[in-house]
Length: 233
Image (cartoon, rainbow, N blue to C red; front, side):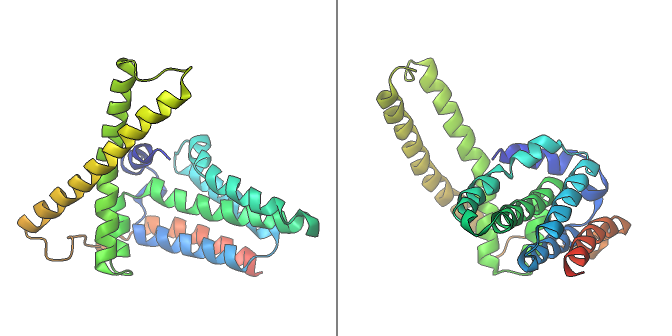
């Protein structure tokens, strides 16, 4: 999954979903996941998926690219669904729709909401240490991926990659990834030391502001409420 691309969508696109607060969008996701849990019929699940796709379209997001991220959920749910085909087509269809609908709702959240806003909400719901660890991991991911990518480019430039030598390619790639893991460990220690030097006392300053709530929040709340209402009715 291209996290830098997702981050760019969350920060640099303007739409009604982007202007809504993180709180309303998280509530929307909770309503959608509730629908996924209680639904045993493919109709409300299909309706939820279609409405979420329309919401992605309204959010000025590249629909095909965004939906491609849900391919992971589709692939693994399809494998499980195929094992249930003996009981009819409805059961496997529901399994796939549940997985894809839940995945699309979460993707809609992260592609329309900057990650500090999401973590600010999570900080009120989860242990502070866990949220801080998730935030630092997210921030470090870009650095580590960028360094591994640059090393792979250097490997290709210096003849370390050959289309006809799979064993050689795997060996060189493994060494680069191993070096990246070691560097990631060193980076985490350096980051921890820097945080303590700068006054870290067990909680990163992520503040949720009630002023971020506005009329735009009606839209994601309406989407989630309609999806749940159709499932209940």
